[in-house]
Length: 457
Image (cartoon, rainbow, N blue to C red; front, side, top):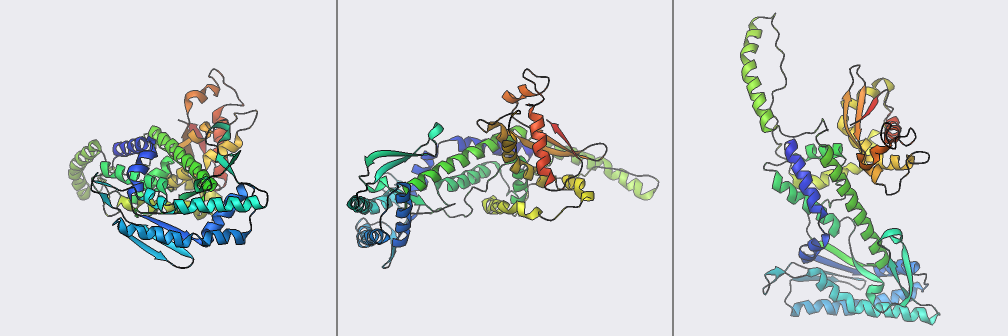
C-alpha cells in the first residue's frame, strides 16, 4: 500500500465517518440479528441506578417483586413470534429470559425487518407497567419520580436537567442498551474501516504495518469493535446512564475525526511510513539494479574496486495478514504504555529515539493532547475549546549532523501561529512552540531520553 493509497484510505475513512450514524443504525445495525437479555437481578441493578439519579428511595424487596412479575408476560410476548412466523430462539428459567431474533427479509419490501424495533415492542408494554408500579410505590412514601433529561449542547452538555413532570411510561426511566464495546458505534467504526480498506487495497494489507503507520500518525482505532460478529445484544438499562454513554461515543467519534484530519495533513511529513513502493520508485529501483549488476561483477574480480548502492529491494503489499483482523490487533495497543516500564540507560537513551521512532512518535502523540492541556496556564496560552492541544502532532524523528535526535512537530497554524514571535500577536509567554516543546520534553523524560532537539514543521 503506497503512501498515496494510504492518504486516500485516510481521506475516505474521514469522509465516511463524517456522515450521520442514523442512516447506518436504521438501515444496517437495527436489521441485523439481535439478542434480548432480561434477568431480574440486572433490572433491579439498573433500577437502583436510575432511582439514585432521581433521588428516590424504594426498598430492594419491592423492586425485586415488580421485576419478578415481568418474567411470565415477557415469555408470553416471545411466544407470539411463532404466530408471526419469524425465525427466533427462546431460552428462559425462573430468573431470566433470552430471546434471539434472527435477520429476516420482508417479502413486500425485499429489505430486512427492523429487528431492534421488534424486540423493543416485546418488552415495551411490560416495562410501562413496571415503571408505573415504581411510581405508585414511591407515592406511598410521599415521593414522586419525575422526568430527568441529559443535556446535549453547550454548557448543559452531560449535565442532568431535573423537571417537575412525573414519568408516564417505561421509556422515561429505561432504554434498550447495547453490550459495552459492541454497540452500534463501535460496530460502525469497524465496518467503515473494513469497507474503506476493501475499496483501496487489492492485495491483503499487513495489519502490523498499517497499525504502525496509524500509530505514527496518531490515529487510534482501539474504539473499533474487536470481533467479527455482526449481531447485537441488548438489555434494559438505566436511561440516564445510556444517554451519558451516548455522549461519550459522540466525543470518541469527534476525537477520531480530529485524528484523521491531522493525519491527512501530515502524512507527507512522516518519514517512517511503511508500505509498498510507488510506481516511480519501483521503476527507479529496477533501473538502478540493471545498471549496478555489471559493475558488481567487475568489483568481484577486482578487489580494489568498491561499489556502493542503495537498497533496491522492491517493497510489495504484504500478503497473509488480512485487514479483517486489524481491530483485534489494534485493541492490544491499550497496553503499549506498560511495555516501556524498564529503565532505559542514559547512555542508550538518545539512540532509543531513532532506533524505535515509530513507537516514540506514537507514544508522544498519544500523550501530547493531555500534557499540553495541563500546561496551558497563565501567562501562556489557555485552553478554551481544547482544539489547539488536540491539533499538535509529532511528525518525524530525524538525526542531526552531530548524531542527536531531532523531533519534528506541527500544530494548527490558523489561528494559533499569530502568537509565535515575529507574528502579529507574537509573545515570549504565549508562543505555541514554547508550550509544545516543554510538553514534549516532559513526556520524553519518562523514557530517560538524553539530549535532543525539537523543530516546528
